[in-house]
Length: 253
Image (tube, rainbow, N blue to C red; front, side, top):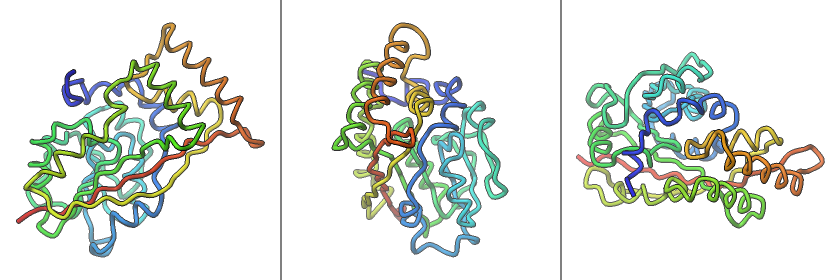
């Protein structure tokens, strides 16, 4: 099977931008705390949020007073982003950010690193980071110990024909073995995302490997409706439970 970076990562979300902006989960405050810990004052930092999508993580960082350069190659995703005065969207990729050498204090990749070509990406991150900088790679991983979340994952995996992006955690291995980054450590945080029925369906449709039409899509929508009816609470919400994993590393000299 082709690696994910050869599966049109820069164009595959073009028809998902609205669902991505509306229904993707955020990240826990403690995860953002860990990314910024022990760096300079937020107002002094310049952050490259690479594969920024519709700017979910960019805005979280900007709300801390950080200046964010949101690097996103997909025009539709950039256009769907809500504006923030400290977030500047730029057309670029992980492999070629178009940023200057040693120009950023922090590189952040939230829910995106698995789509990058790892070798040129890590070279590029090392190039643009200051020697005192930091790399943060973040994923919201669905918690299969939660009954509802496990059932949701099963439906999505079946509808996607078990797409390899569903097993994306292997994508961290190139960073763990890279000579360009040192002191890699992983922090984990609990998080949950409340959704109504439309939100649950929209969350599934925001995944680029889920069909947007046809019998498989129709069956998935039906199955998600049944799942929602089984688990919704008195407020009409269901909850996807996540383990947010934050990998932190420093550039080597």
